[in-house]
Length: 86
Picture: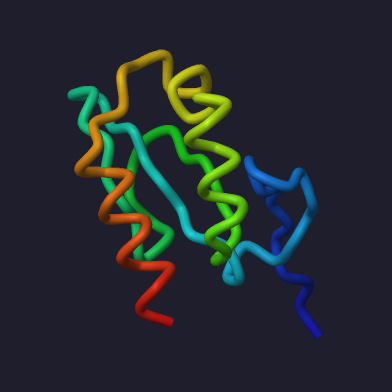
């Protein structure tokens, strides 16, 4: 059986299988988007499919530090939508 790649959630710092997490990507043009396929080009960051982890990331501005860029409210709203849609 093939092992699944492990990634760490930015909110709770727990390691989980890559497929269990939501990926956020910053590409070469400094555009920050959600990556549903997990294969988009660029720097990736992962977060659990949990609203508490998202709120922790927003409050600590961890995503902004990781990507070294200002994160728009639209991206956070998209993340909230993805988490609530499950």
